[in-house]
Image (cartoon, rainbow, N blue to C red; front, side, top):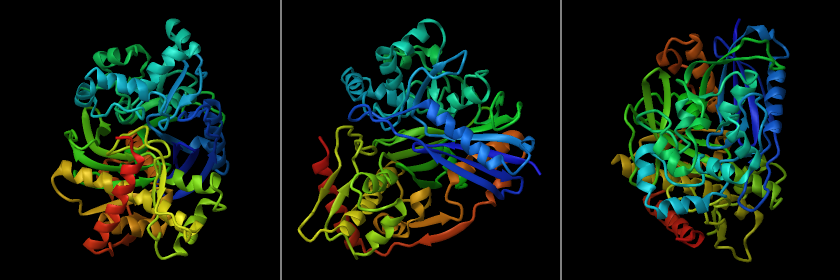
Amino acid sequence: MNYVLAIDQGTTGTTALLIDEDLNRVAEASVDFEQHFPKPGWVEHDLGEVWTTVVQTVLEVTRHIDPRKVAAIGITNQRETLCFWDRATGEPLGRAIVWQDRRTAGLCEELKKRGLEDFFRERTGLLLDPYFSGTKAAWALENWSDVKQAWKAGRLAAGTIDSYLMARLSGAAVHVTEPSNASRTLAFHLTEHRWDADLCRELGVPTDIWPEVRPSAGTFALTRGFPALPDGVPVTGVLGDQQAALLGQACFKEGQAKCTYGTGAFLLMNTGKKPVISRHKLVSTIAWELKKGEFTYALEGSAFIAGAAVQWLRDGLKIIPDAASVEALAGSVSSSEGVVFVPALTGLGAPYWDPSATGLFTGITRGTTHAHLARAVLEGIAFQNADILGAMEKDLGKPLSGLNVDGGAAANNLLMQFQADILGVELNRPRYLETTSLGAVFAAGLGAGIFADLADIEQTWKKDRSFTPTFSPAERGEALQRWHQAIRRATTA
């Protein structure tokens, strides 16, 4: 029996998943790492700490098998987080600047004032926002001396987390990525599929720091000197985390959509072989290139804070002992009693894109309890997605008929039911919630020839439960009206 190993490198930790050829889960392990906040609005990861969690989790899942039986590795990763390392040694040149980081808000505003917003949107499908990687690279080259000196010496490698992991896994033998990650940088042309010199010039970033772009399924690297595995194990599939979840949810056809509830919430819809350039502040992205030259696109809306709001209740406000307790606390009251929470703890993503927006509770009275606050936090996560879906429906010109859900918070039945109520569509939850890791397994299996094609893996998707809307149109309208009143107070527009 051979195995496929998925490494899911996320915002708060790393998960390793070992799957056999029949798609049975053999072992799974997760390890969290520290979040660094050097200044308000800044979020960084220590790449040494990240790498340690990769080694720890892979060692854990392979300790009861012969590691020589690992036939392929799939990688999925937090996407817009940008890393800098020495091209020759693989050693980090500083902390990673995380996708949540807002330090480049001023640079994004400068580019907008120069009239470049349409230029970037047309070429990349993205908006000028600190969320994306390109302005992070410009900032680091300007402000971090080790990064600047490495570039002058011709030793600077920059890239998303997948690129850094493959450099470390291979003993610094490769500097590679694939289109779903490259298309999140503001430096990669969406339809010409190349690093764009004009985009890089406007960003103030050299083109030679970026990795080689290969198809999402195929051989990227071979392990060398990796403590958990023998040399020569191939990395054969790589996808950004949300595109991996789209694949893991078996959304292979145009019009199929999913929402992943992780640190943030991410709605993606498969738009087929052509990108849809949004008129409502969503982004167009490459979903995958599973065969060379065959690209699939997606329309995406991202909310920066979802599960992170529950973590804030636990760690910041300390009103729950652990994240799993939030459902019972929120369910101890029948409603939020008019309390509304806007989860703008790191600004607002789609469709507002306001990096200066702040978190907000409204409707608090002397009768408000911890239970009302907890319920309002869960509802705030769902309200954000309603706005994103509304924008998506306008771009498509038709309503969605349903939505597949996954991620850790999708296990929260109260949240899922309210999400169905406020969206007005049926939600379908799969048996295996960590579809991000499953998507990495699928990509790696396709790249290694373990799976013949998408039809070969489509049958693996199994439903756990559906959530049907219970709100009347009037109830839904009243709830959304309260939400939009709160949004207006939280935004700077």
